[in-house]
Length: 429
Image 1 (spheres, helix red, strand yellow):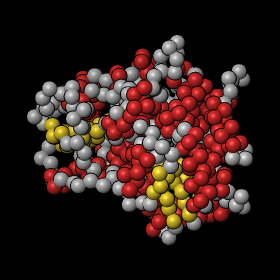
Image 2 (cartoon, rainbow, N blue to C red):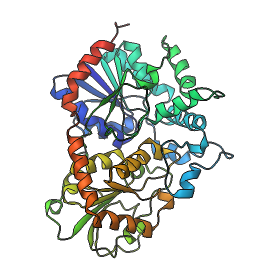
Image 3 (tube, one colour):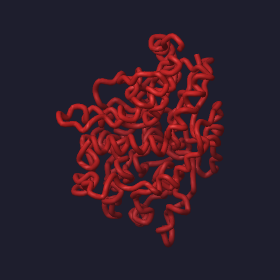
């Protein structure tokens, strides 16, 4: 088979796709990863064949210009503002339609402008994939799949928020409409295609989340163990040495720092101050920009710009992170208790971090400390003490690791993808 992966312009999203792409290559299939020119080096560094589609997106510039939906919109997540924590069933601006309209408009304007969609379809018609696997934000991948009669699978990085939002919108008796259809139907008509539900939800969806992470009903989910890929990087020798004190990893993820995304992230000063008087060794994977608020590093903190979590976490007693897919998967893989502090950019909390934090708390394997804009040093210190002093957190994290490692691996999934592709692939136009 020929399999085309379509990523969005975030390296962390690309990294979720890499283990499955390599499993398919190892099984003898042809693979190509399509992304914007901004991602060309990142794709090349995975060792996978890639192709650039569309023009440079200049994501940092566009995201910096992005503002709220409208001046009169209600505050995002009023419950989270009151309690410091969100729940998955909440909606930004209190309305699923407003949230979905903002999401669809942003993805169209920032990630996949019409010129990129046209180029992606042109490439698909030239390369002729049998299967197109897309990031859940990469809706034009469905257009390309339909244009060549390929099967289409989505691959989640977190929670299936797009389907959750759309289902909530369509269930409202006075719904204002369907923003995804409003964007995609005219796009598909330009190529002589028709919009249907698979345009949004795929022929099936690959879910790298454990079964106890919330997900909407009515979608054909194919579970897969999320084998974390941290990207190419040298690993310092000290990472492999056993620490003399309990080691804590602090990371706020790749997406915010690589793209300099606007929004609210936890203050590095608050994070490190919370640990300064604890008998722990702190490894803070924060870059210079993230450390600007820190006047002096506490004596128990080692700051490093980047270190592969797969190498670091086996020596850690806990990890503090923002709820990113890579950090979450790495911690699950190594049975490390997690403390999650979701970043705040519009409504991104509901695309994974909130459900991950709630799910971990439900399993007793971690703590939802607070949203980044409500976090205090005292609150984080209390969360750390709880996780470090109560042995049930480590025991439950080890149990979760056993369960996750029993999920189908990317290699195990290949026969199912071959079967489903044969079932859903249509005659070529």
